[in-house]
Length: 200
Image 1 (cartoon, rainbow, N blue to C red):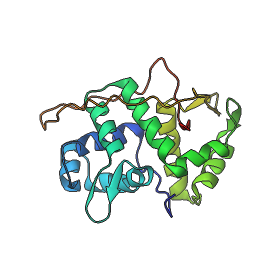
Image 2: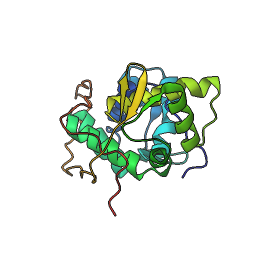
Image 3: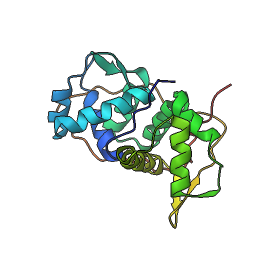
Image 4: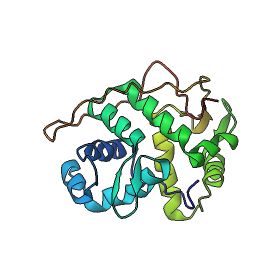
């Protein structure tokens, strides 16, 4: 587990746009170019890199690049493949010790008040709930909702049940081009998320 878990500064859709823009770089990520391609302020991109590093989508020190899991997710987003997008996120969260620990702090299929849910997730991640992190925690919940990991029922949250396996991402990555138009990634699908399930 990383010493400090960085929460996302933006919502699910913005995160996916940043990740898809990273796919254009074979090696070192150029954040100014990523911001330009996304038509975002550079501050938006830099504000989310810590989260992408914390969950294992981006790696490296001063010079950063996509991990293997990050490349698979970027590929799925670029071709707007809903099932593979969900499967890639599930694998990323399952292999990240910090996010995996959330499962030990939540009860499956039981309604939980948002305030309690946020405190339990913060405890699992080792995050202090100051005003800034409170806002970022809402972004994290939004990511989980988009991936059907959490379900909002009348203001209370239900942590979803999962199948007892991780569906492996199909390893045929398409080629990328700067001319490829980004379309809104869809996390929905018929299957339920299998977020924290670990292959023995």
